[in-house]
Image 1 (cartoon, rainbow, N blue to C red):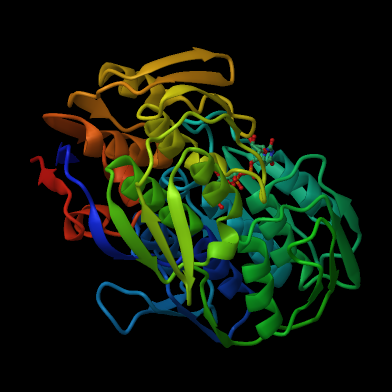
Image 2 (image 1 turned 30 degrees about the vertical axis):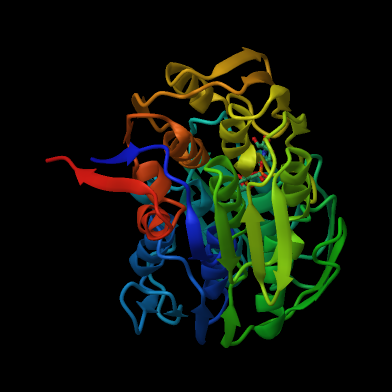
Length: 422
Ligand code: UD1
């Protein structure tokens, strides 16, 4: 298991290229199961979750190819699918494997996908995915930890999601495109990954209106075809580097990003005194010119402040003057990073889903353990400002979703290295 060794206190300066969005690439890869023709996907980040999804598709006998190493472009052809199953060994490492359920049952009339099970940031059930597929006419059985879905052909209907779910919306959208007749999805997630997926599906021949709004209307078609698509930039990676620039008192220029997807994050960081300028052509400059001040934030569905930026914001709040209140409204138990930050000297108290962070406090390097993907990003940011050395354990969590984070940080002046343990 690898660790990160971070020597804090360095000011970051330079340019960082933002990678493609993992959370857009995963449903796009699953959507390739909808056609026998080749789909070419560009701007795929080279992160562990993508490798897991590629393995899952290969397990089903898809042809998954890439012209470059590390791969940023994938060609996926799901022509000779023989194993219509997502096994536990792969699903347990990545919940998003559930995204194969909708496309598989829509195209093949059958799918067997392991239930993802618990997750360190709360229970995270998939009941809404299953209920919606049942409404589309699938017969669902849960047996030996697997969801089995069967349907001769899915039938369009109206589905109202009782709670907003990102992968739930994506899963059902990718099922409805091949259903017979019209499907209306209500109370859909608005995250930018949804219109990106709809754009890909439309290029494949799907008929979709309203993606990116609460109501999506789909006219089912009988067949989809191959296409080429470029994945949107990763808004969470961009947000993480904005905090990295601000927290280290540095100046970073982020390129290849989409400022339009970062509205709530940029607004909140500005409230904390961070100087941010969108300079056009997908670039954002961040500078620490003022002292950081406390701000309150509640995590919300898009276009609200992303729960995936909560741990990074908490790291920033430890360096801001005053008390910042953070309310986590999306996931239960998403404060595992707080106790690790406290071990580094942060002044944080937790009461249910409310965290109060009093700053600024000097952080001192300590051995800490990453508990999930975004928690690890928060700990890396804390390590960048801590004095002495911070050792972060279990960095496989960060490898799930950040492309070469240590190389990108080192290139702008951070002292961070990956230490491999035997
Ligand atoms: C996606 C993102 C994740 C992000 C999250 C919220 C991907 C691969 N992952 O996760 O990075 O943190 O959105 O922005 O895109 N819920 C149910 N039943 C369900 C589905 C969800 O109760 O069937 C609940 C969840 O437990 C959670 C809330 O709904 O409390 C939102 O979850 P959801 O939007 O589904 O998150 P994911 O799609 O898993």
